[in-house]
Image 1 (cartoon, rainbow, N blue to C red):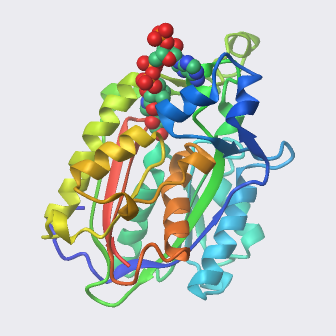
Image 2: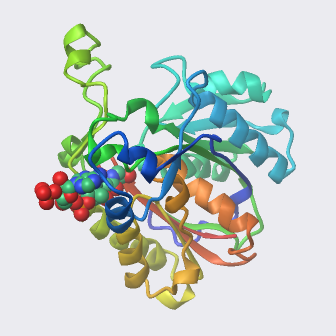
Length: 332
Ligand code: UT7
């Protein structure tokens, strides 16, 4: 974010996460498409993923993760001033999933809206929350990143169906002591790569018709190799940018919480940031790529398992459809 190197005083005061109970393993996928546990593990690092029950929607996961974040932050629902849900799989086009969740969460004083920046959604959400808090417009903002990618997955396409899973991660953004919280933040987009990752139908360009359904246009399409190259480059650039903007050096970084898309992308980022394996949180073996939920679920688990300690300088970094990217250097 901007040229200001002193973004301290706004940070995360509580986190929460939720993943559905139902597990789909690589062996289960072997029965659906021509793939193998060996290929998926070697090429991606994923072993299993969670699948949201058919009778539930993304808002269910938003509510579960949101409740936990409020509890963790020790604030009541009435204290939440805004709910930002980042998702590419809203319950429906409108009303927003944030509005649907607002009622069940009891956040009666909160404004509520959805934000779409694909897998970079959590960092985009943080940037908006940062703006609200630092301008004194709001005191507490709930950012929930939630996706049910199983709903838009073509289960006959082995190039994509092995990669994704469902889940939600949440954080409460508020005032924190000076010299803590968000030290720097960078978000960006390159629309020239919009076609590399898309859900072609169901919007105003291709409204639902028999033809769009028959042509499988309501499923996620991806040019995996192009996204891979972009990810490796951007994860490194965006991480280095926030380190520089915070006036820090590589050796000041204590921990990395990357977007969980592919272990090869994560390892490349880790090596470029010269971090040991135990300084990076990886859970994609359990959950696959949960789009914007990946970073906040990983952050919540890393904090709750004491892998991240108070005062650590942590990089959150992700990339995704748009194409978009986002990175944040935060002192917890
Ligand atoms: O959140 C952002 C979302 N997207 C991403 O992060 C995706 C980034 N991209 C990737 O992670 C990788 O590009 C993939 C995991 C999607 C693919 O890995 P890859 O090493 O780039 O493989 P590839 O696409 O180059 O395919 C290699 C081979 C191909 O066979 P041929 O043409 O060499 O005979 C594929 O058909 O592997 C084949 N293949 C599979 N084989 C078994 C592709 N998917 C599978 C599969 N099982 N599931």
